[in-house]
Length: 111
Length: 522
Image 1 (tube, rainbow over the protein chains, first blue to last red):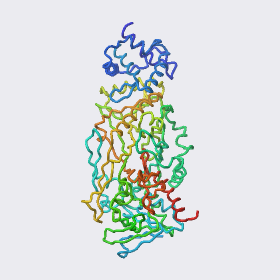
Image 2: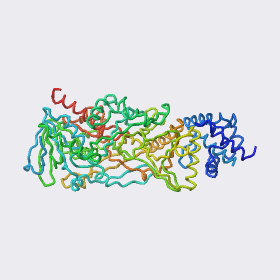
Image 3: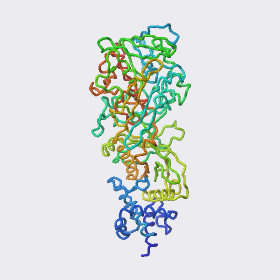
Image 4: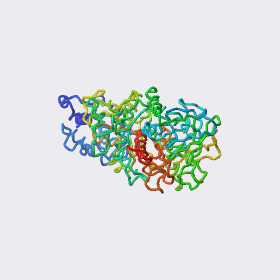
């Protein structure tokens, strides 16, 4: 899988379980205006404390059942659990779940 | 019955009443209103006149400093003068009118919060909160709270397991800052009652105890024009504010060298204030902010005119217990995005986009990314015996009263509580899929970004145990038979709530007690 394709799949996963089902299966990513450079900077900040982690391991951790429509509800559950167990990633004051940090990390690795 | 300018009385006049109230602020006025038309003869002694006067305000002058770990000291000498109004109606003249009860959690003894716990509970105070709300013509803070049941203004869907909740605030028109005409009626019409007399420009400079030191015999009253009078009653209520109550008790040392009510060295200690913490963002740095992922309308939380009913997000007792923190609130407000096109703005937008998608938003807000709001935090100032008001015997006001020194102290536990609470607030938003919070503040900058409210609490704290409090649960000074204290100085803990509604509730409770104690038949 090419890096570009993998990244598009990740964005597709992020859009999969949305409030507009018609768009959920659209080919166009729902984060078309995501600033890739900004996301990569956040991802690199998350990766800075985890130099040994790779994209394949991250993808298995974040998206164990693939990048289909079921990915987003699972991510959402994981995010809630992260916040409740204190697994957080703070970026310039923004308090994000560890899962969100890892998502940015994966985006950075797949950039 | 009347308003009397004490400056116009013959020198050495003797003022007599059954009940003498020292201070014509909201506490003193509310007490008099409760007794108006009854059999007790009531006299209010108010230092000020009908309008704020610079010379009279100057009687408050003293020195003050805020001290906190990891922060440079914050000189605060103008605070005693700027934070109170010495006038008929008291600081109600400059009050914005915000009304909030203390949370049930505020009354509890919390093992992780030394010196916490009130000798009364929120349910016990609820009937008096209701009466205070009725007096101020605002909705009651009860189970039927209308603010939280307006379908047009839905609350955030915060999961109760996280312990944060939407806490309402409303505004009364009976404040000088809201409706001066209505407040003028509030602060004067009660004196039409035949049993009420209000003495203006009447400064109490000494509370005189009998020779046994256990009962007040008389008050020395001084006017700025040189007149001196005496006031005598059966019972006295001290209601001149959280700093001035201390000043008068400590300065009244003719019989007891340590002052009145101070056998256990508690008068003036445990000073607590309310402070807001917020940081504006710019092109380079984040401010204190909230991203709201899914809520279609946040009007329940926004209060653009600063006068409307609204909610804040508050930490309940379960959250406090889990985090080992005190009370905490986040007050949300609209912000204008800044720094468009900068790396900071781009990263914020990326954070919000991903959070909005993870939280399930696709249909609301600005392009499906939710809403970006600012917030200011408030965090309970824990009771601290080293945070205190003392007298400066080397400096005296024109009436010969020693001036005060306020050393407002924070402890490491206060900063820990604030930071943990801000984090917990963000965690609660995120866990509920409602949004994310940004708290970019460094500990060493907390005092710098803080803004103090005009709330002075804790300095004559209430306790059933005379070794732990200045006044008992009936607000009577433990060691003085006929002296009571009203106002927020009796609060053992300060919570977050603006104190006025609680002051009024406690005063109404005191009024009922005094009626019973002084033989008034209901």
